[in-house]
Image (cartoon, rainbow, N blue to C red; front, top):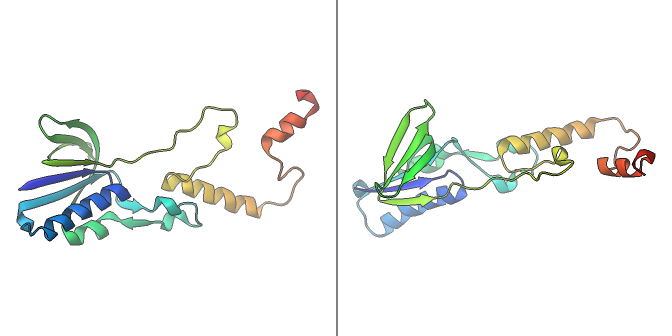
Length: 168
């Protein structure tokens, strides 16, 4: 049996896993001769390009709902190392147990993350890189819309500091 192991439950990982199954079927491979496994720490495919929209919590789809029907096995774990010589991956399961996953083919689609700049005022920045970050922005915007008008409401924080007599 050929083991195709995909690391990452984002769009690239999911499409890779689905593409491996589709290619095997198109080539007439017996389903018993191939195992596609996807390793992801999360349970959902987060629709990251849409996290800027209202109610970002709804911008996800269960990985099992997408992968299960086509026979892709999902392992809920975080990959901690890759041994290319032994052709295996070590992952840490949710129960804190180590899992060793062998592979014949490996797809590394672990994704990316925002790097926060180290500059004055960065604490006022929002991003939509993760579900949690998008929810924080959504909550901030909802609270801001409910606030009573006040002097300087639409003045950037840095402008008021520049214009103050103490800064001259």
